[in-house]
Length: 275
Image 1 (cartoon, rainbow, N blue to C red):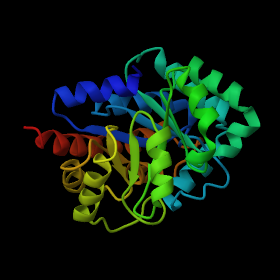
Image 2 (tube, rainbow, N blue to C red):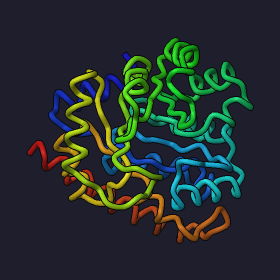
Image 3 (spheres, rainbow, N blue to C red):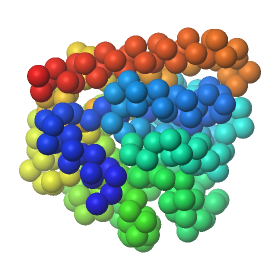
Image 4 (tube, rainbow, N blue to C red):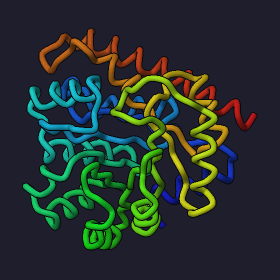
């Protein structure tokens, strides 16, 4: 059983929903990032999605795209992102870490080398936005050999054939994209999302986690009625807007404190569902 699977099993036994924050590796500074991960856990993260900076992030909205630019400007590469995860693992051996990124940097490193680095660093899941499930068979198998889950996206516009492929190849959890568009998109139709999640649950036993459009405790709780977990990215990442690797430590700490205030709000809202 992988760390992701074990975490969801524990949460289910406790009747709790997973809170999964998304942050960009090395944003705003590589020096503060490992502390950020530990703080997220202290403030209720059940697992963490870590973005891999990439120069052409087609699925990212402006907030996350700018986070990637800040990380790249600060010198964070895929290798360095993995080194940060490895450093985090020195003090935390239980919180699952999921890498989220694009295929190009992985191909540059090489599939086998990337998987070996993930295993060595303590990565639990990998979500490659632009790797279709139909083309991912060998990659999924090689990840699974190291107890690493391959996460896939489903959206309101996913065609039935691709949906079936996702069900076949996905592990850990399914990331359901609640909105059409890019990360940070606006209006969230909770009822429509709930209907979609319930329909997906008829087809798979995998946990369903919903991302895109969750901004506060109210929207997290509304989605948490249906989903097994909520993923929150842009709402957290936006706090680092205007900062960089050259920013004063006090300014980064203030932004990080604002993120933790939001985390507390999200955690309390989700926990209230099982109270």
